[in-house]
Every structure is written in structure tokens, then in C-alpha cells.
Amino acid sequence: MAENPKAVSPLSSSSMTTTEEKLQALVAPADDGSSGANSPKSSKGKKKAAVAPTFDDVLYGQECPCTRREFREYLTTQRADEMIDFFETVETYTKSYAELSRRKGRKEKKAETSSQIDVEAQDQASGVFESARSFSGNDSVSGVCKIERDMDVYDYATVIVNQFVVAGSPQEINISYTLRDKFLTHFKTYDHINRPPIDLFEELQAEMRSMLRGAFPRFLQYVSTQNISEAHVFHRAMYGCIYFVVMVGILCAMVFTGIHPLWRLTIVTFWQGPIIMWLSAYLRLCDGLSRVGVRMTKDEWDVFFTIFRKREAPENKLTNEWARQQLMKRSTKLEIFSATLGVCIGIATLFIPPGVQSL
Image 1 (cartoon, one colour):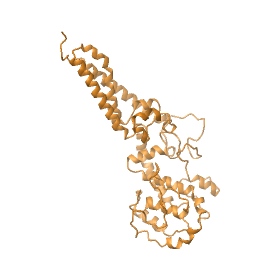
Image 2 (cartoon, one colour):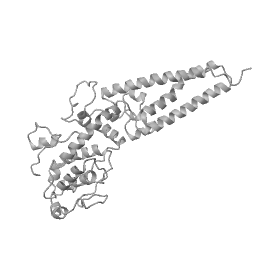
Image 3 (cartoon, helix red, strand yellow):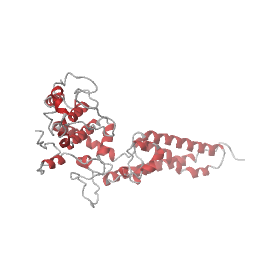
Image 4 (cartoon, helix red, strand yellow):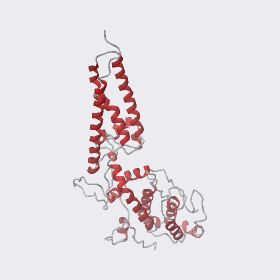
């Protein structure tokens, strides 16, 4: 089974004939800017249409803000990022299967000992399989398990099971007890000699794909209505409060110094400032970033002075035309509403009588 792996993953293509082509069809291009044959947007020189991205566009496409990276960020806000992490880790397992299969040697000497471990009898937080190698589970943005130098197929499969499948694992995926028990029982039949097949996680991967598809409509709503990070919301609200205090201070100075109310016309339009800041924080939407075609998605954007510097980063450019238009429409409404309300407040301040009458 291990020598001639069959590509039966739900991500594989039926048109592939050779083993090498099947292995390539099982994996999707990474979010590093590289192109792939499976990407719906891979053709060059094609004008981008203003249409909503599909589920496959998000998982395999390269356009911001509708890539897998943004999908993971959305799932993180919903405390459900283990689904996309498991999905990507299994892709890594499939992609690296041929190389891991060639790693033998001392692994086979430990096979008899490793295969005797009882899955259900272990309840330690570090995992249930003694042959699992250490890994950096949360060192990267995606949290995908790492492949170490001395791992073979069984070792890496064990690490994945420890991290995602076993009940009580660090990133336990939400699957039924029946499916979990069935998988773990089946996994116990493998060791370093009888290596797990390439489609070991096929059933679980299909379940994760179904769950991700269920969350996809809410993700589209998210990327077409918000363009600032959750952590930056506090800064927006804080800047709005500071702006409002400054405006009230200027108004009080004009009132109590007794100058003519018409002088307050000079600051009428400035009342829009605190309003648009507060609305921006409430709606998670920045009108300025929408107009320059940028989406704030990284943690370093949470500091105000880095906003302008990060606008030039390619990974933050908003290139999906549909999402850009949706954000622009929402930003335009935000600007009109805040400007109207700000002017109304400014005009209302004209009717406040001076506190000190001029001599």
C-alpha cells in the first residue's frame, strides 16, 4: 500500500494518470505568492472580474483579501482555526509523503515497540504516541505541524494525530466520537514498517472541507465589510475620544472668551473627525484604507504609525475587485453619514450663546 500510494483524496484530479501527477494534484499552492495549476485565478493577463470569490478561490487562489490567510484570520476570530490548520497540515503530509516514505533505517528497529501503544489508555497533554517527535505546534502563523529531520511517514502522521485528532489534543478538531474512534483504531494498525497510506486522513480531510465550506458565506460577509484588525478597534475608539475632547476644548474656548459665534464656522466640518473614528471602530472599517486598496490584516498594523508604511506591502494589497467594490460602497456610506452628522453638530454649536459678553 505504501509503495504505490493511491491518490484518493477529495482534492485529487481524475485526469491524473501517473503517481507523481496524483501526488501533485493532492496539494494546493501555498499562500506565498506562487502560482498553481489548481488555482482558478492562475491565468495571466486576464482582467479581474468583479465577482464574489468561490470556495476554491479562497483555498487555492492568490488574491488578497480572499486568500486562505484571510480565511484563517477569520476562523481565528471565531475560535475555529484548528479546521484550516488541520487542512493545511494534511496537505503537507500528502505533499511530503514520497520523501517521508524513503526515510527508514533505525525507525524499523523501533516498530515493534511503537506498535504496542494503546491509544485509548493515554491521557497525557503531550500526546498519546511515544514515537512522536517534538514539534513547534504554535511557532508559525498557521500552527501547522513541522517536519523534523529524523521523521518518517509514521512519525509525522503520529504528530498530526497528537495535535488534532486525539480527544483533548491542543487543536482538537470537531468530529463525531464514532469517526474519531474509528480513525484511531485504524491508525493503531500502522507502524514504521507497515507505513500509513497517503490517503490516511482522507475521511477527516473531507469532514474539514465540509466544515470550512459551511463557514465560507460568513467569511465573505467578513471580507466585504471589514478592513481593519480587531486589535486596532481600540485604537480607533481611543483616537475618536481624543479628537472629541480637543473639539470640545476648542468650542469651550470660543464660548467663554466671548468671540462672535460665527467664528465657530471655522471648525464646523471638524466635528466629523470623532464621529468617523467611532464609526470606523464600530464597523471595523477604515474609509482611507478602502480608497487606497489596502486591507489591514497583520498584527503589526495595530500600532498607528505603521499604517502608512505597511500600505506598500504586497500581501496587504486588496486586489480582489469584488471585495474592493463592496468595501468602497460601505466606506462611501460611512463618509456621507459621518459628514452629515458632523455638520449638523457643528451648526448646532453656532446657537450656543457666548459665555462672556464683549464690552
